[in-house]
Image 1 (cartoon, helix red, strand yellow):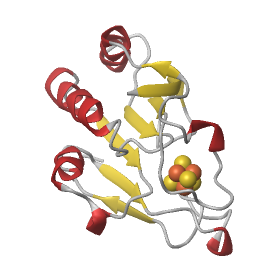
Image 2 (cartoon, protein in one colour):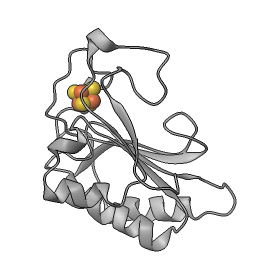
Image 3 (cartoon, protein in one colour):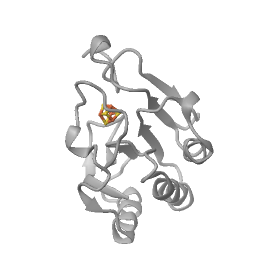
Length: 157
Ligand code: SF4
């Protein structure tokens, strides 16, 4: 998996103070994509074990309390990413209890394959669906167009 940016303290992508990872790779090719530089799965930097360790360490750092982890891109459920994202969310559940996980994907919940579903079973909130420029609405919270849905999947979010 490759990624473009990791923000250890972020107050924009999801509720509260968070850690946010923007991965590389997306197949959806939405017109008006907000993050076109991330679409090639080979772009950006290699996601390392050291960065995964840092994310866990940041999430559990008592000096700056984070509410959780946001996973965006690109698409965290892209075939190049889904195995490492699954390993990461499993680690967050095991090593950073009480932290929520938000995930943005161009796939809809109904379209997910079994591996992608394994990820979503560990996620608190999934914001799903492609960005549709015709349905763009700046007043929407956490999504860019009205076809996208904020699915609250766990009570803890
Ligand atoms: S799903 Fe998101 S990252 Fe992928 S093309 Fe659409 S807007 Fe861009």
